[in-house]
Amino acid sequence: VPLDAADARDVAQLVCNFAEGVDGKPPLLTHDDVTTLFHEFGHGLHHMLTQINERDVSGISGVEWDAVELPSQFMENFCWEWDVLQHMTAHVDTGAPLPRALFDKMTAAKNFQSGLQTLRQIEFSLFDMLLHTEYDAAAAKPGDVMALLNKVRGEIAVMPSPSFSRTPNTFSHIFSGGYAAGYYSYKWAEVLSADAYAAFEETVGSNGEPSIETGRKYRQQILEAGGSRSAMESFKAFRGREPQLDALLRHQGMAEPQPA
Image: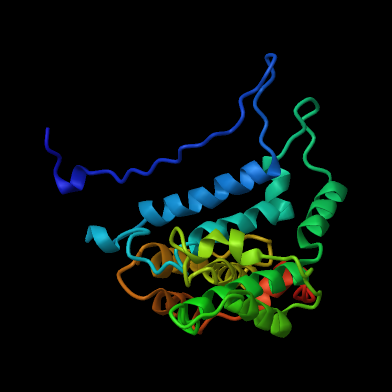
């Protein structure tokens, strides 16, 4: 039976693959499982809350590759909020919430050597981009690809790579899938999501409650807009400016946290 447009309901599905419980015990989610669930739920929200009727630019459709992960990575931030985890974690036997000491250790592990990890991602991103913009395959000589990578490493890396390193041989992103000349989008999406989340950190109320107005603005300018306009235009409509690195550096332990 055909439905009127007014009767139609948006539908999004998250198809999960979490481990079932064994020996009569309930299924348990690791913190990584929860982070993955929040991540994919962010994509679901992007799809469900769209206000664009044109299919090709509604929801996540038509959003630039380097910004489509903004809503999903944005949601991951909640999995690293102490107040949030207190209300959604419990010991399977005692019901006690996650101990603060364990949370602090998890955060420290997440941010361990984050500076080196960031440099590694920048190295991959720059190598990928130069390979697709400046490297001339027709005029190339044996060893030119490694020479290009070593040039990038000379500018970026702080630790030398071993002479036997042949990273390009296994760097599938540079020629397969959707990341050729787009590997940088991994880190750029982190910049966008961290800066977007910082808007909520900056507007939290004196009672610790998040700002409803900030949430409404995020929904309207980011989630509802879909791919109907450029991602940068949507971001600036939400933040009032272009993205900044400060929030990502704080969230990954590379800069001092904001004063309370």
